[in-house]
Length: 149
View 1 (cartoon, helix red, strand yellow):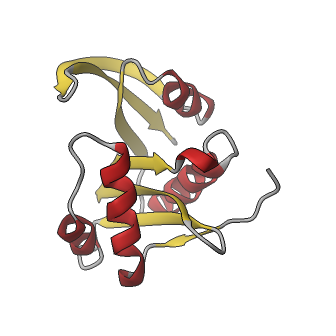
View 2 (cartoon, helix red, strand yellow):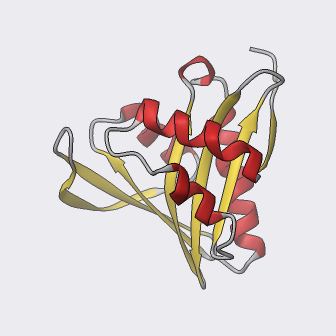
């Protein structure tokens, strides 16, 4: 797939599409209002990937000083394996780093081999397991961390 997308910050006009993609892909999705509220909270950074026709993905970073949690990562099925998530996460972490973030954390379903491979490729290391973290279906979460310094 030739790169046809752009990466940018989410705006209010994007919230409905982001919330819809979240609902399509997760059993316990964030609501429209939850995404809307990130726009007025300076601790959040929301990056989206969009081509001329559709939202291809988004990711959310919650910054708390020198640490940040990547709380949401989602790529539309049509865009998976094309480099969209890699680019979004790279931009997201660059923005976090510009705010002074030195450590990034995330949880990922134990069975989500493609995502775990992506995070490892981006420099994340497994640091623990959160038992029965996810519901619908119940599953362990692998806790991962990337340190910049």
